[in-house]
Each structure stands twice: as C-alpha cells, then as structure tokens.
Length: 234
Image (spheres, rainbow, N blue to C red):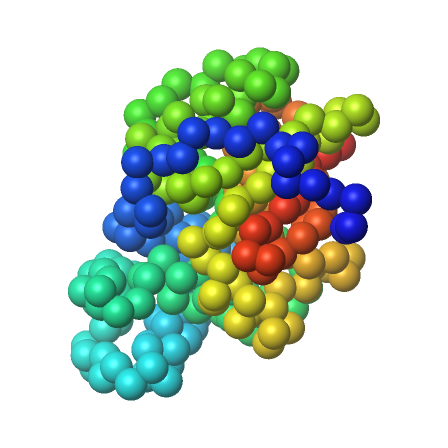
C-alpha cells in the first residue's frame, strides 16, 4: 500500500544480534508440526520430512537415509546451519505439506500457530498477564522475543485510529523461503489473501494470549525487503 511510511512506525532498539537463534526457531516450527500431526496423522510428518530433504537435495546436500522422525530432521537441519537457515527449510516444508493435505481449509495452520505460540511462552518461561494496552503488549513481546533470540533484529509497530496495529520487520528471517513459497502458490489463505506466518498468524496468536480476543491480519507489504502486516481485533 503506497500510503504506508516506515517513518510512521515506532521502532524498537535493534537487537544485539543479526540473526535469530536457529535452534529456538527450528524447535518452534517443529512444535507446530507436531500439533498438525494430531489433525492429519503421521502422513503429515512424513511429508514434512520428505519436502525438507527434497529441498536440501535440490541445494546439493545428500541427506542421511535414516531420517524418520522430527527430532532427527531437526538435528540434521541444524547441522547444516552454516549453509542454510534450518528454520527456513522447516517452515517451507511445513507449508508445502499443509498444501498437500489441507488445500485451503486453514485448519492445520491454526493448530500449528497455537502450538508454536504455546511453545514460545514455554521456552520463554514467561507468565501471561492479560491487558489491552497495546504499547505494553508490544514491549513485552519484543522483550521476550529478543531474550529468546527468536525475532528479527529490527522491528516496530504502529497503532491506527481504528484500533488495528501494523507490525513491521525490516528484514524477516524467513524472507527468502517465504518468497519461494509465495512464488509456488503455497501462501494463499482460504479467502484469497496472502499468508504471513510470522507477523500475521503468530502475531495474532500472541495478541490473543495477551488480550483474550481473537485477531485477524492482512499482509500489506512484503519482500521490500521489509514486511508489514495489519492486525485487527475481531
């Protein structure tokens, strides 16, 4: 949207790292896969593993033939962290598996994000105090994310007059594989809008935890390299 200006955003202090912790983010995604397995069964996990290994094979990596479960996949991808972002590969494989099995129902995606959010809170060891102060919520989310090294180094937010909130990542850690998934038509939501797993779906689940209200989102800008989503209480 042409009327958006980065200068309008309240930017947080840059995090003391450039890239998120690969293990933390990969474990969050794997926790989402485990949740979706409860909906689709073991076939979902099998497809995630297949797509992840196929991705690595296309990059010239020869994966071990004995990878049968998510823990093995996680450790294999982490062993390649010096070449490829393991959380990006895992996210791409997850999205591809979702499209194989759910079409555009979105049921698996919701469970995935709920599990990832619960896992993030668990890893952070934080207590959720429900409030409606958006500034306080954003500060808390940022503090927890930076302490876990699970968020982009540069991010900000903007409150709108209608009660919605715009979130911005100056460069999303998932940018490259997200763009690949988008080019392959894997990021279309049931209503035709573009999917954003990090700022959109994960952001909505976090706000739900803090406010007790349901939230929805719309992706406004992507791959510029900044990404912007608008979250709205429903």
